[in-house]
Image (cartoon, rainbow, N blue to C red; front, side, top):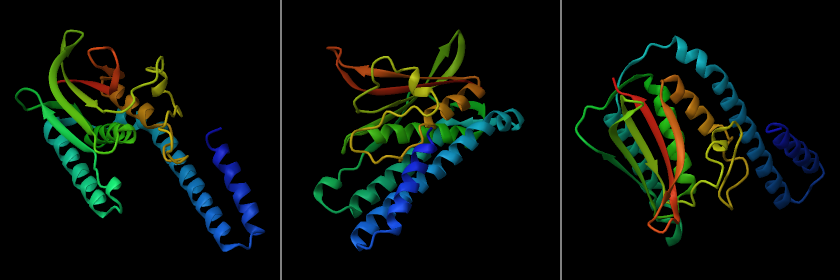
Amino acid sequence: HEIKNPLTSLRSAVETAVNIKDPKRQRKLLSIILEDVQRIDRLISDISDASRIDAELSRAERRPVELAALLKALVDMRNVAATERAEGAEGVENKKAITIRFIAEGKGPFVVDGIESRLVRVFDNLFDNALTFSPQGGAIDCKLSRGKEAGAPCLWIAIEDQGPGIPIDTETAIFERFYSERPEGEKFGIHSGLGLSISRQIVIAHDGTLRGENILDGKGKVKGARFLICLPAA
């Protein structure tokens, strides 16, 4: 179903483009064709990735990963890129970058045994998700702390945004494959609907947990979403 929709759109656009002579309409159709091709490419890549993650993780050797250094590097890279995009954007309304703040609570090191490249994939997916729903000029908090889960020491990573929050009764559904709840106005096909599913798959393979919840103010009003990762401490 997820692949058939863009394929149907692609076929329709190609068939129409053959008979269109107006250059403006041709450019519009070519843009639609490109977006559909990109969506299909993303879907195939993500489906392929999801199907081989378990096998790869079962074979890969886990190594100590210091999460404070890793998360800080990821946050710094994203902030630099966001600033450059904002400075290069036209119009004052486009110059308000979304800032990601990294906060380590307590003393390090914060070490887990894991596969760094796959953990990076998880954090990137969650940052992408938070950025998608965050308002211009907003902030995303990435918090790292120590805690316990089922009596065992663990490291908590919380990624909090200032968006509309998670729709009621979808806290579990958002982790299902191809589930997609996107902001109004976002172009169709930007996301495959597999990011959160793949993230949870990787976290579970690391003997951890991943869940989503809403952030509430004192009056019970939703003021954002929070995604919580728990990984066993090394």
